[in-house]
Length: 408
Image 1 (cartoon, rainbow, N blue to C red):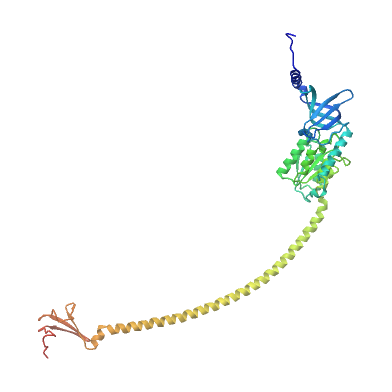
Image 2 (image 1 turned 30 degrees about the vertical axis):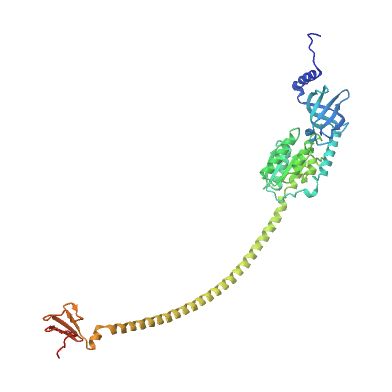
């Protein structure tokens, strides 16, 4: 045994796993087969099953995060297409398919998945009539989520331009078939709601097989439509085609052209009504102008009367003020005159000329007024003022009025 390369079971399983995982063609595979022994593990949430055809079988596991994204409940005997990766479960030494996505294969399986999802969403209330939003009667902008190259967008444009040409169309280009369709449509719904430029959205696609229309039966898309703030009209396929999007949308149109008719008023039907409304408004305006003219005349007369009354009132007030001012002026003049007379009497009483008229005189020595005999000497020249003139004199003798008698 010496020299041999002896491996443990774990080493061998790890080696085989690395070999398989190193093969690029096994990193993402699509396997078609029939489900058998499908089991949900109630603790982990993972699902385990076997995928088989007429001659072989392959073990597979669907982890919880992928199982929760399924639009249907897998069942034994259902034919499916599974996308995933091939690897080895080292503990048991079993190679198996680690599934990421499961799609029904065949009309019967698709119908079963459709009914399962329909029942699930209906039980949640996503189809209830009370949650349906009404469409705007006169939209200004309509968003259309569809393929930009198909005949659908041209049909919608033709119908709308004929019926209601004043509306604006905003196209959100998406794939409407294949693996990329669901993601692109959901992103378009999110973008349209974020922009808030449209009044409503039309989700449109032409006819096709059940497989072609399958993206419109996706649970993720159904929930995106239900959560849209903008009303959504589903116009997918022909009149006999029904999808999950039809049930969850606010309105289902049998065809894209029918959707264009349902969301727009007919111009030809609007014109007579508009003419009638125009005539009615003109009549209402004329009647309103007449009423307002009459009200204006009444207001003018009332205003003029009020103005006259106000002028008369102010005139009376002005006359009263004038009379009061005159009377106050007279009283003020009388008070001033009385005060003046009193002042004149006082001035007359202290006027020197009045004193002189009573026999008194004023004696001056030069410019000095003499009020005493003290300081006067013989030979001094004096001026004596009488009431009616002056006398100039020379002092001969000065007598002291207290100690000496004045000769007569």
